[in-house]
Structures are given as structure tokens and as C-alpha cells.
Length: 427
Image 1 (spheres, rainbow, N blue to C red):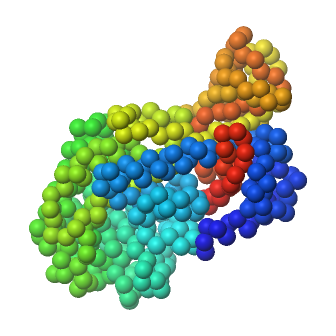
Image 2 (cartoon, rainbow, N blue to C red; image 1 turned 180 degrees about the vertical axis):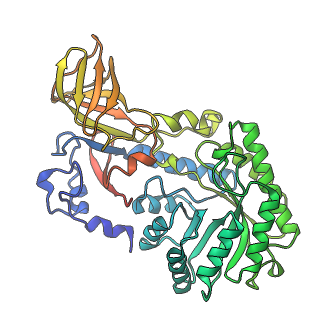
């Protein structure tokens, strides 16, 4: 299925905030009307994705990865949007990263041909489905983690009889107390031995996630990345990527070395630039995902572009608009967006601008979001705040991954408020 097919979906009750009088129009027809977000019948709360900032972020990472000779498989769990996947691929992405088998199924339903699953998969039904996908489509490239001998054994058991081996990379854990991954190089070699003994798997590289390095600093992240690179070199020297190093009788054409979340990709780029020559070409695969929308909180603080401003800057592309529905005291107001609409797992939304019913736009001076109920934002207002029932409050959000998953359909909006497209999500 092509992402273009999503344009044929009908505007109806399934999708929050769409104009009631758009009922029955296809999303393509509604976008073609170029309605204004504020005056075109959209209801509140409504999440808007900036068209200009989205394009800026896509282009920035395309240029960054090209400049640093990196392949790019942005993590699709951030948006779970086939339309955004398509745009990421159009902007040079090698493929799309997944975290769980369900996400792989969504990607395949929309024709994604290269998928990197950054977890070990031991779910037998999922593995058998992946094997069928590989058998049915010779052009499909799939790579996933292995991080234990037991996991390799379970994978091999589920995949027996599959005509194509599943490509795997050994995951090196980021340290004691970190998340997944083998903790020591000895553990990694034992896992590689198990892969070589399995007839259903092919070892193609090493990977991990530097964002889990305990008490991360640039120096500690770099030290872990040096271990990851050294592990790949050790595997290569031992012939683990050659015909004799696999249980399948076929070596890999390239060695995959993969890392890179959204907080340390500058350190990853520097480390990967120093990967020594190995026996096969190296695919230096970065997996950052939050860049596509960026944010006004967590990632605005963590982005590597704060350390390398000469390489550009991401722009927060989300704004949540809600309407003041109660102003019970001069010190308090409530809008109609809450936990069902706004990410709140890392930080509360931040009031940025106020738009009056007459269209006047001003800074949200003296207005602070202090809490969220299911369908209400609690606002504290000081004497400088100008705010009335009926005003729209535009809020900046933190953590894109838990923003996207609250909205099945998101208007893409130009700076003047014109809605030019819609982004569909599949969580």
C-alpha cells in the first residue's frame, strides 16, 4: 500500500478536531480547500504541525548525515506516520527503524523496503511472519538485534525451514544498569558463536544505544562507542562476517555498525568517522527519530545542535491549540486540552501565544500551565495576563514520541494558518 492511499480516507468522527462540515470529504479534498486552522471550522483542541518547520528539520538531518557520511534510518516509533516515513526516505534515509514487530507490520503495509528493528525479537509468530515477508520479497532488507544466547536459540527454533536467513547485529549494552544489550565483549562473542551455529540467522554487524550510557557525558558516550567499534573490528578479524563465520553459508556484503539517538548523534558522527578499514564496506547507520518534529522541552535541551550550532538548529514543529472554557478567578483559567491531547510524561505544556476570537495574536505573558486533567489544562495567570473565555491558547510540547500517539490525524499548517495536508498515525 502506498502512503498516497491515506489521502482517500474520509473525514469523520474518528479524527479529533476536523471541521464538522467536512464530514464525508476525503482528506485530499479537505486539504485542497486550504482552510484556515482558526477560521475554517476546526474544533479545539487541535494539534498543528508546522509545514515550514517540518521541512526544515527533514532537510537539516538529510544534510547533516550526508556531510558526515552516515546512513540514516530514523526511528519510526516517534511518529508512526507512513506519510512522514515517505518524506524521510525522500530526504535520503536508508530505511526506517522500528522497536517492536507491530511497527514492522505497519511499515511493510506501506511498502518500506529497509527496516532496522532495534530490539531482540523472540516472539515466534512475529518471527515466522518476518520470514514470510523475506521469502515473498527478495528486495526486502530486515535487520534486528540479538543480545543473548537464549534469544538466538528461540529465534532459530521459530525460523527453522525459512528460505532466507534473518540478518542480526549483536547489541552491546551501554553499561551496568543500562537497558538491553550484552554487558561484556565476552558475552557478545558468545552470542556471535550462537548465531554462527544457527542455520537461520546471519551476523551482519554490531549496534547499541548510547543514550542509555549511565550518567552520560560526551566522554563516556565516546568510550562506549569506541568499544562498539572495537567489537566490530574483533568480529571482522575473527572472520565472523565471512562465509565461514556464519551458519548460512553466505557472508554479508557490508558490516553494519549502528547507534545514534537524538541526544548524542554528534559524538556518534565523530566516532564513526574514525572507524578503521574492515574486511567489507561499513554501513554507518544513525537512528535518531525525534528530530522530525523536535519539541519545546526535552529535546530542545538535549539536541546536539546546541553543542554544534555551526551545523544548524532544529525547530519545534508542534503547537497544541486549545480554547479557554473557564476563567473562574483572576488567578486561574482552564482550557479544553488535557492528558488525552498533550504529552506530559517529561514536562507539562508551555503556554506560548494567545489568539483572540478577533484574530489578534499576542505572547502568553503571565500564563503558566500548572497541571493537566484528562480534558483540562490548568492555567495560573498573574495580573499581567490578558485572557478571556473563548481565547485560543497555543502551547509548546515536550517529547514528540508521546505527542504523536495521542493524535490519529494531525493537520499540517503553514505559518499563516492555512491547512495544507494531514498526517495519519498508526499506534
